[in-house]
Every structure is written in C-alpha cells, then in structure tokens.
Length: 226
Ligand SMILES: O=C(CO)[C@@H](O)[C@H](O)COP(=O)(O)O
Ligand SMILES: [Fe+2]
Image 1 (spheres, rainbow, N blue to C red):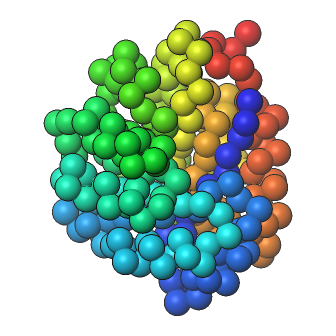
Image 2: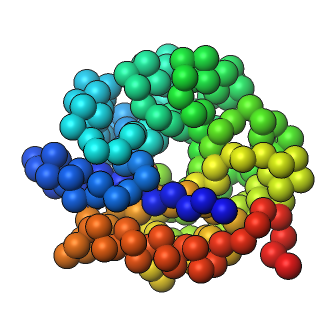
C-alpha cells in the first residue's frame, strides 16, 4: 500500500518558508493548515499566501481548512491549484455538495473529523470523498500529543474502504512522530501529516525517510489485520 508523508508547514519558520519547503522535497505533499480564528482559536494563512506557497513549493499542496463556511471558501483553494483540499465535517451541513464542487474543479476532496466527531455517518458515502482526515489532536495548534483513542475510527474506515475496494486516502494529523506513526499505520492510515517531528529534526529529509520506513513496517492491506 502507498504511504504518503506530508509535512505540515505550521511547524516551519514562516519567515524562511521557501528554504523550509526546499528541505522537504522528498515529501509527497506539503500540508498547509488554514485557520480562520473562528472554527479554531488560531489564525494562519489565507488564499493569497497559499497561492504563493504553491508557487515556490517543490511538492503539491495538501490544504487542511480549519474554517467556517467551507461552501464559500473551499473552492478557491482548489481553483488556485491545491492537489487536495480538506474541509471539516463539523463546519458544514452539505459535505457532499462541497466535495463534489472540489472534484469538479479538479482537486482531491477531503473530509476531516475532530477527535470527538463520529465517523459512522460517512462510512456509507466514502465514494464521495478522495481523502478522510481523522484528527489525532484537537485542531488548532501544532506540537500536541497524539490521541490513540481516535484509532477505532481508522479501523472502521479501513474496513469500509476495503469492502468497497476504494482507493480513498486515510490521513492522520497531529502528534505524528516515529513513536506514533506505526500505531496509526497499523490502524489503517496511509497518509501522515507531521509538523514538529519533521521541522524540529536536524535533517527534515532524513526524518521524512525515517517516518516513511516506520509507517511501511506497520502498514497492511485494507480491512482488519490478519
Ligand atoms: O492541523 C493541524 C493542527 O490543527 C496539524 O496539521 C498540525 O500542524 C500538526 O502538527 P504536529 O502535531 O505534527 O506538530
Ligand atoms: Fe492539519
């Protein structure tokens, strides 16, 4: 199964973003956390900065929208060329409509759930999405502790995706390091966001390799582990 390692630039030095990006050229995508200070109590980038980040990034963008009103704002991130655009289930009553719009524009459409949000309502409509993000910390800040109690959601997603033969990406975000990535891979994740563990490393490129190897060692075919 393919493994994707997506470093989160939330943990990078914002005034040296171009050199931070060049240090992670072996990553699959770069994860960009958009926060609006309403959906979460923190504020980061808007579309103009994300567009500029994309122009200098060696890898495509994986945009994580922690914002209210994704119906209004998410399409703009797909239009500027983000490879994947993920919005939060808690922020909209029309997740399928938002996802369809993102796909029409040409992005992978992702849906994210906070640690306390149930995944069951989405298991039967997985074909509407290209990515499900199971948050492994409360969204809003980098550098928090991985929450293993979110793993049953990944197991359910992995089984549901295995049943219908879906190639949907199962992403985890928050507290992913060499100590926790195996737990998430074992539960069924294949796409890993890592902020502090990559950017606090002396050599971010080597850290990406290390995370990739640790995830591969624990990953297995979709569905319950035999
Ligand atoms: O979306 C978020 C936080 O809300 C994340 O993408 C963090 O940026 C991950 O940072 P680490 O937990 O890996 O430091
Ligand atoms: Fe994120």
